[in-house]
Each structure stands twice: as C-alpha cells, then as structure tokens.
Image (cartoon, rainbow, N blue to C red; front, side):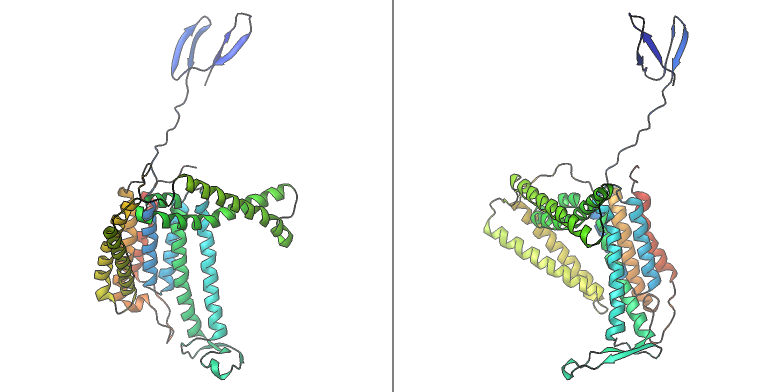
Length: 397
C-alpha cells in the first residue's frame, strides 16, 4: 500500500494520510493510487447448545456400557478425543478438563487391575501368570484372600471391566470439556435453577483452582523461586486457597444481590402435584435406565423410561412457576444441536441392537481365553460419533 503525506503551512510534512481503498486521483506531482487489501470477515456463529454435548457424551457412555470389547472401547475413546480436540474452546478453563478425566480413568484401570492381582478374582482360570505369597486370614474373613495364584483369565476380565469404567469417565470428561457450565445453567428449567447453580459452582471450582495454581507457579518461576516439592506446594497452596475463598464470598454476594432463592407464591395443590410428578418421573427414569442396562430388562426398560421422562418434564414445567426468572440471549436448539445429539443417540441405539444380535462379538469370552475381534458394523456405528467434528464450526485461532 502506497501512502502520501501532506505538506503543512510551515513547510514540514504532516501526519501520513490513510485513504480508503480503492482511491485514485491526481495531484500536482502526478497521479497517485492507494490500494488497501480487504479485511477478512469471519462470520460469527453461536456455539452449540450445551445440552446437545451432554446428550452426545452420555449416549456414547451408554454405548460403552453395552460392550466389553476392548477394540470398540478404544474406538469410543478415540472418537471422544478427536471431537474434543477439534470442537473445544481454546481459552475456556473447563476445556482443559478432558486430560484430567483421562488421567482419572487410567488410575481407575490400574486400581482395578491391582485389586485383581492382590485380592484375587472369582473368575476361574488355568493359565497361571504368577503366584504371590498368600497371607493367611482369620476365619471371619473367609472368601477373601491376599496373594495367591494370579491367572491370565482373571487379569483379562479385570482389564475389560476396568476399560469399560474408564471409557465412561472419559465420556463424562468430554461433556465437561465441550459444554460451558454457565450456558448449561442458563438452559436449565426454572424448577432446577437453584440445584443447577450449586452443581455448576461445584463443577467450576476445580478448574478455577487448577488455573490459579498454574498462574502462581508460573509467577514463582519468573521470580526464581521454587515451585515444586513440599516447600513450593506450601507456598503456593495458601494464595490459591485465599483466592478460592475470596471468589466464594464474591459469588455469594452476587447471588444475594440478584435475588437468588426467592420464589413466587404457588398454591399448595400445584406444589404437591409438582413434587409427585417429579419424584415419580425420576424413579421411572432410574428404573427404565436400569432395565436398558440390565440383560433381562429390555422388555420393560423403554416404556418405563419414556413414561418417567414425560412425568418428569411435566413436573418441571409446573415447578417452573415458582421461579420467576428471565433468560438473556437464550441458546437456540438449532439444526447443529439436533445433529450432535442425534449422532450420539444413533451410536447408543446401534450398539444396543448389536449387543442383542451378536453378544459374543461385543462381549468376548475370557473362559476360555479368545482374542477379541473388531465387528465391522458396530465399529461403523461408533464412527457416527465423529459427526460433531464436521458440523460444529471451529473456533478461530
């Protein structure tokens, strides 16, 4: 871009003049032309509804609970990791929680294997890996042993079981990394607002605490002070706790100033009906979910779950009358939210159907030991969970 200054009355050059582009003309010294490249414009799109992310993650968790195949479980973990890496926010503190849940899942898997090695397993086996010294226990502890023979069948069974629990934790971690807690609270119905505030505050306390600790450790490193070890932990822990207490007091003052906890007058009959519908609906949801997860409850699981959901929604609708609140810029449930939640629901439904039609492929046997194989169409069903990575806009760097 070529720019030209203007001569002032004193004979000096004044400030450089910047012309809008494109601009052409003629001066006393000849023709001039100024060209400014167009500024790129990014079209702003609202983020996906946080409820869609939770439905997607919980659906993948339901799919993980229906199989013990380590190959399918590893594929589910890979799907969640890729979607989180592509769709999560780069600046939000809760977006870093996926790594913490992954470490927790690894710890759960290792603890499950350690319990099997030390305390034994009821799974019979003929392939002995190692024989540990067995500690004799009193007669009142019959059925429990410490040490003894460790078989390959017991270790493989514990590995499958621990990997399934780890996958469930990682799915929950994906929901925490993708969905904003504040936006999720804004989307809750009025009857669950007070409970949602408590849950959101509890969920955001740990990420904020970790962020404060990292900031203080970085400041100590810049000053040449130790940030690791017992001494560094003690010197960093007190400011972190002090900041957490100050943030809690400020949050309490802000909630009190905004009228938190105040409710409108509702007739007694409406309150009783709301309580009965909500309690009955939640019990129905629990019973229906147990029926879907249990091997012999597939017949009554779906009707009881649907009836419980309808009753719970009706109770929440009536309960919202006692909480007079408005929403500023509510998050829309648009086509992207339907695609995200629908992708997770499709994965859960197809894996549930595969568990009924081909249980041997989704639950490989351990007695006798057989090598797990990757079933083709259940694996293709799991890959449907990658749909959010292609329909959700990426955050510009």
